[in-house]
Image (cartoon, rainbow, N blue to C red; front, side, top):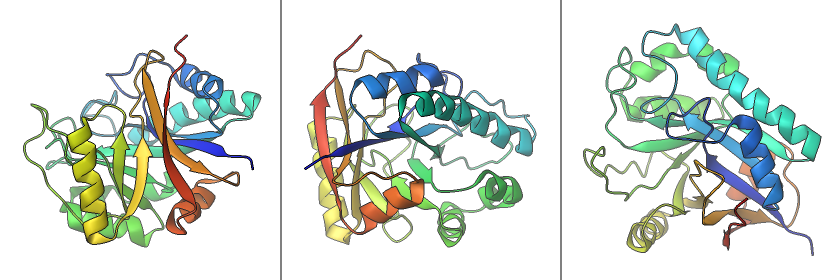
Length: 238
């Protein structure tokens, strides 16, 4: 039986200050690693490349154009590329580089919806997440038990997210184990992501399916119907 592998958490140098691989590099890297698709989830807040003073519509266009670069490269290779964002809680919409360090992957939100809902990002996280989910967006709590200097505290939103990233290639075994226990305690869906920033990653992870997912909606449906499996592989660095 064929298997299809998907990355749900990766960053480009055009969108995330912490990444060293371009959108084109990302697509080529994951194609070499045998993946069928990726979700490009650059830092929308926090360590993203969009300045605080950028107009809202321009901010959305900035990240969407990066996704389109990766998508174009993926199309030449037969790699599906989906648009996503990594949102770190930003208490002040005018200072989106100032964050609490609690990170969430947002999938299946259209460019148009994001442009029309600037005010939602000025709401409390619980309200923002509700608006995103009402619009058909899918929210994954990324590495919820990661402990780093830039993370103010561990905050959990079990009633406001769809899934938990139970395996992150950059997290410790204990952080991933805690994430898995949290997901199962609350009956939340389980995902995985490499959180990749470089073509020199040593370990990659993600979700595996028995059928291809050619759209973000198809991938989300597979997750919701529990037709996905977490996997991890050693990367063949080039």
